[in-house]
Image 1 (spheres, one colour):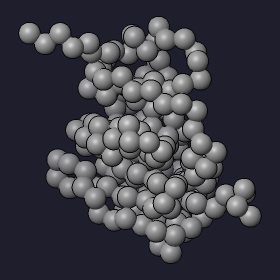
Image 2 (cartoon, helix red, strand yellow; image 1 turned 180 degrees about the vertical axis):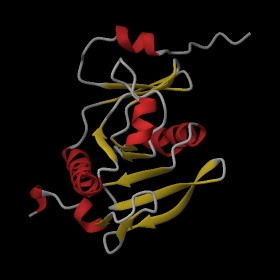
Image 3 (cartoon, helix red, strand yellow; image 1 turned 90 degrees about the horizontal axis):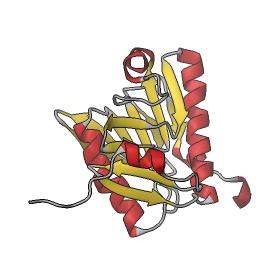
Length: 189
């Protein structure tokens, strides 16, 4: 008999507002501390380029850390998402959370083995299983972006981009961002 505790969305609702981010993946609880300055700057830079493209195309919506509840024991808040208008109509529920996969999910790595394990393994597996079409893992410390795309039933690594490269996607026709711009921070100037 398995007596392991399985966390649920209801458990998260009971947690105090303490400035930490709690997520559940396959019933396992993950907690993150306040992010690093460069983590947030990376999110802002990527969000800026995605929003500029989206404002021109009106193809969907870009959002920071939206709640996604796939199941009662799968409740996450990725750093950034892009979701098409058609998918948003199906996914957004009255509780203000997404209940189906956005097409694009972006996680910016936080330092530490537990954080990397969550984003590179647990979330990759979750997003793959739940139908995300593209997943970007952004490493601000080493200035790299791993691009995973759906190949059949799973997300597969298709590119690792560095500052001399351009970030583009068939999912986002016409979108192009110099990778160096993603890692450009005011504190380094």
